[in-house]
Every structure is written in structure tokens, then in C-alpha cells.
Image 1 (cartoon, rainbow, N blue to C red):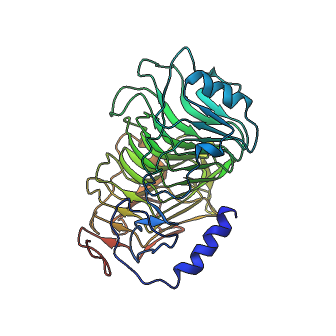
Image 2 (image 1 turned 60 degrees about the horizontal axis):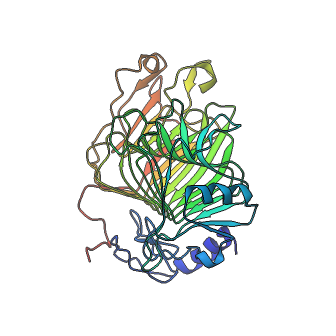
Image 3 (image 1 turned 90 degrees about the vertical axis):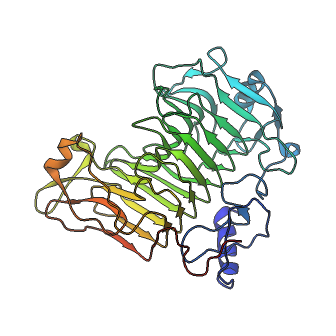
Amino acid sequence: MNRWKMRLCLLVILVTLPLEAFSFSSTPVAAETTIPTYGAPTHLDGSPVGGGDGYLGFIDASEADYVVDTAAELKSALAKAVSGQVVYVADGASITITSSNWYGNTPSDIDCGLYLKAGVTLAGGRGKDGVAGAVVKVSTSLQPTVFSVLVWCAGSGTRVTGLTLVGAQEGTTGGNMWCGIWAGDDAEIDNNEIRGFGYGGVRVDRDVNDVWIHHNYIHHNQQEGYGCGVAVNAYNIEHTASAIVEGNKFDYCRQVISGSRGRSNYTFRYNYLGANCTNTQIDVHGQNAGGDYLEKTSSGEYVFCAGENTKIYNNTSVCTSNPFVGVRGIPYSTGSVSVHHNWTYTTSTQEWQLSSDRPKVRTINEQMDNIPGYGYIAPKGGAFVRMSSYDNWYGTEPPPNYSVS
């Protein structure tokens, strides 16, 4: 059964269930999932938000075509594997990517540690009872001079599941521009712990669509100026990029998710956001300079596109140091932004301030009063264009039908 049919079956079950309290434990439950009126559930599709203990969709080593526990074996298996095959990193293994065993510059001009061909699954045992899942990490001494990625999904239909992926930098400074996973079309990225990547945990780049990122724990990706848990980057209005991001746990990211430039599209739902963030938590960029990021309005003005379709709902955030949502521009003309049924510890009057180091934005857009709790920059004239924010719950006081267990 494919994931969409599975989701439809679960939805039929869900509509008959009462609202219940939720807490973020790892206790396994049945496949039913209760979605609170406000905020994230404790489990999604029967697996705990953030994955780990109790995750139902793990792959067992007995199902794999290759089982490896060294860097050399891993590279060899990935080179041999074909669509439909599984490469499994042995339980308890710890593999380090160094200057002597990484791929380096690939044909797409991405420096990478490992790459997956179309339809190949890279798996580990995170979440299985009593099992220490495998770790694949980047050597802290490996400092590439260009943007680099640990796992590059070079073909469509790949899956990365059940692994702990560790970058070379967990702090806010260091300039080590590693990304954990560079996704491909129709990739599934689930039940991983992804941490320590200066650029960010997962990148969905231009013309990459239908990426499913779920049940991961993504944290300590916080390089100043970058540091995204997930980045969806369409580049400009000639390209698209899209992802569904759900059932994940985030913490210690400069930004939890960013939609960058042009026609980026993401649905961000059923996620738990921890207390530690250093910038706007959920972001859609629109400030980048250059004509290919602009769209001409009917009045003849050019505006910065802040994504195309962005849907943000049923998330819980306990961070109070920075605003929950920031939309820096207006959506592309065919799209919209909707923000609803979230529970955020930020108050209804918290504002997002425009940085003073982006003067070009000021010549095109004017900042206006915020919809309560949400930051955005309106187009010149102050109209609220193709954006809606409604039925959200603010503050630390729990919403209705919620109790601490």
C-alpha cells in the first residue's frame, strides 16, 4: 500500500476519534492517530513525532540486499545497488566520512560523501527495540571549500531511513557548509536523527518535487546566516520545489524551515518545535536581490516572491525567543500562504522586525502591522495579499481539550 492510500485509510479512522491530551513520549501506540484542535499530535500514523523508539516503519537488516559496517563497504554497496534494493548500515556501526573515503566532486558539481541512485534505500535501525542505530558522520577535519552534502539523493524515488547523520559543526560559527541530505524527486526521508550541519539538515533544491520528510529529529543545525532544519529552494520564478514536512521534532536550528526565493512550496504540519531557535522559526524568503526573483504586478511594480504555496498548520512551538512565522514578501500569483490551528508559545502581539541590512527590500516592500503573532512584509501600499492566518492558539497556557499527563 503506498503512503497516500495508507494516509487515506488512517484519515477514515481519525474522523471517528475524540480529541485527547498529548505528550511527547516514545511509547508505541496503535496505528490510529489523534490530531488535536491546536498544535501537533504526540504520534502521527502510529509512530512518535520525531521518530525513534516505537517507530512502526523501520526496515530490518534481514530485508536488506547489502549489510555494511565500514565506509568502504558502504560506498561499494551503494555503487552496486539498483532501484528497489536496500543498503543497510549495521546496527551499532559508526562510519566516518573523511578526505580519503568521500566521493568529492560529483558530475552535478556537488561535493558529497555518499550518493544514492534512483530507487535505492539507505537504511539503519534507529527506533528498533533494544537496537543502537548506525551513525554516519562527517570528520570535523574535513573542511571542503565549496558547498557539500553528506548524502546526495542523485536519482528519484530514494529513501533515507533509520540513521543518525552527524555533521562537522553543531555550533553557530565555524563556516563548515555541510548539508545532511540533498533530496531528489519523490524522496522519502524518515526516522533519522540529523544534526551538526552548518548549512542545514535537508535541502530540497530547484525542480525537485514531492519530497516527504517525516518522523525525523533534526537539531543543532545553526550556522549564522544559514542553519536550516529543512530548506526548500526554488531559486526563482522559473523553477519550483516542493515538500511535505510532517511528524518531525526540531530544536537548535537557526530556522526550522525556510522557503527560499521564487516558487518554493511546502506543507509544514504536525511538527514539534523546541525552545531553542535564533531566528524566525518558520520562514519564506522573499528578499533576495536580482530580477529573476521578482514578479511584475498588474500595476507595473515588481515584488519579491515569497514562495508559491505555503501551508502551515497543526504545529506546536515552545520557542518564545523569536517569532513563529515570517513571510518576507508576497506569494507568487498562483499561490497563497495559510497559517492555522497551530499552538505557539509566542504571544499574539509579538512582531517580526525587518533586518536593517537588506536595503533593497525597503525600496520595493514596506513593512506593515503584523497579523497577530505572525511576521511578514506586505507589498507597497500595505495590502495583505494571498495570505491568511486564523484559528491559532497563543501563549504557554494549554489550548482547550489539552491536559498534561
